[in-house]
Length: 109
Figure 1 (cartoon, rainbow, N blue to C red):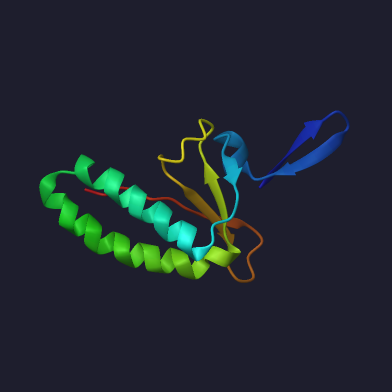
Figure 2: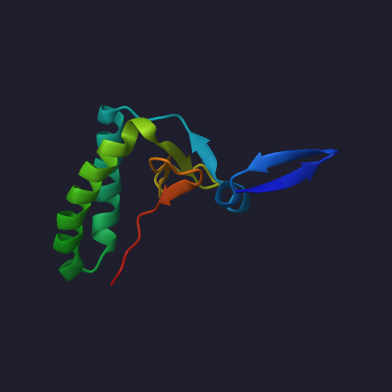
């Protein structure tokens, strides 16, 4: 977190959101999030190398379950283009934390 100055007043902003010009999205309920994830998986899977597709499907199920457990305490962001077919960024505060934790999907070969 950092501060910027506008006129004579300091404005508190989350540096990741500000730097990457992330746009906050309305919160998801469980059904809408599952629908989003199904579409995300359907769109991404064919872009992976064939031998990586099954591994991706195996791990994304666990990730989705984990994210569902964080759903009510999360904020959701997309890039400046507002393309909801792109990557969704989740943000939440770990218990007792003062800084936001951001979760991103990443492909690790």
